[in-house]
Length: 130
Length: 161
Image (tube, helix red, strand yellow):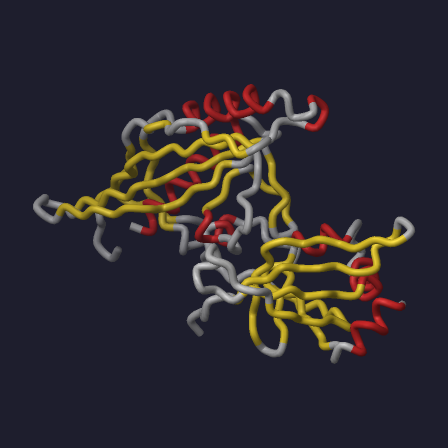
């Protein structure tokens, strides 16, 4: 709850996880022939911060998304998943303020054995054809 | 040439299921055989372990034949950290098992070409065939061992392709 309040005070925004539908086990889906069904999972409050570029970044901007663990837990129970890791494993992209990002790395912060914050390192996704 | 790529992947997928039905992956919410085409999945920040990842690279076209022949270079990448019950100490054996599986999957060196845009897939007139695979050296990155295998996949362009 304290993490939620802090994220809100940092101009807390909303992040959308684009997750895949579960019924994708078809030949056509595996060959990229049919578009998979997607759903958007809302996580809020969240805060974005741009990471300092390094020589390894290939000019692609990297961001860190801080997400409240309570909103993740809520979505995990809503989607009847076993863990937050399952939710992140289903995620294709993260959308914040209309911009798509790809997840590079996920870490969590814990206190008293309980996760209170998820930190996602994101990379800006390239523009896709319409 | 897309039909040849699709047919090659589906042939390997079917052969893997017959060889080792236990090699599975949970991907996009579905449990499926442990082989995938990299360009047909979401970008990976880290390639999944214990599965075969197909990557399409070079392309050559020979038009000085009765039918145009297309050669596509395929890279098959796989990696493993071993199993949890062995604390990862069996990673060499696990990689060796994948080597053996891949050698078996690639034989015989041909498969019928099918068009997967139709349901059910429509059989075409020619075959997709490939040469012997070139196994690269093992790459070790801390607890992860990986190997890259390259081969050329050939097919004839048919009318309408």
